[in-house]
Length: 314
Image (cartoon, rainbow, N blue to C red; front, side):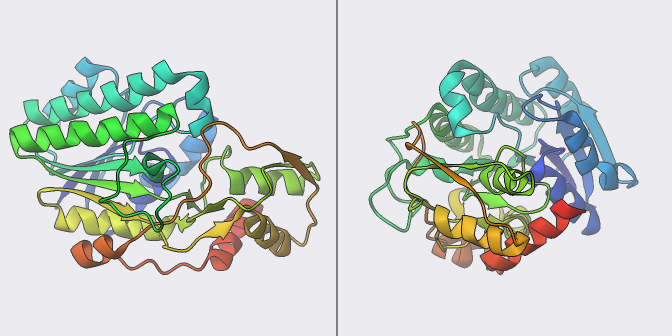
């Protein structure tokens, strides 16, 4: 039985991955600090199913706490680490850049050091499409320059990738850095656009629309992201940066229209200027993921929104 340690296990992606790996007969060691960025109760609900499983062990811990993290790694036998824990969000990172680097860079360094100290050499690192910035070349390819981030969050994720490469080079770690493209679906964080807009429509409140609605994202359904991570765990070898997206772009206006149609509600829109740190477009070239790990995203956006709203109504 393979043992996987997941940081950020109580979060949106982490809890889905925990459930999927438990169903695949893996033993899971979960770590989360219940960051107050959003309600602890939401995260506790995310873990409800996992906590009932005999092969799930949970530690409430902060990845910045070097001593505690090293203690956990020293008492558990771990085959692969999936490092999802991070301070999330582009706009909040502009307001508090030091905390983002404290968690996302120093915290990642603590995970890598704990692995080194305890003889663990396989890591999946959660990076982000935000590292591409306003890349004029689309779709975004892993070989494109990512030297021009436009938010502290993006810069912190790029720094994490560089740390991962360093430990691969120095200590022969096998590391896959997955660049996630705008993940959505059941359990999505309440601050993210699809969740926030759905809430506002249900409450008959105006929706803040930044720009003219033509900005576009490569929205990736949670099940496809989980598929990619699980394939990564199976195939991890060497050091690779890999895009995980749907390779399809949806404009802000189209996203809103899809939610409106699914809810049967016409949204009131409050048009505002574009915000600092926001990119105009994300669009994943997923040819490497398909070739290297056999990744094949399956979810249509309209169906994914329907599933999200079905969960939200429950």
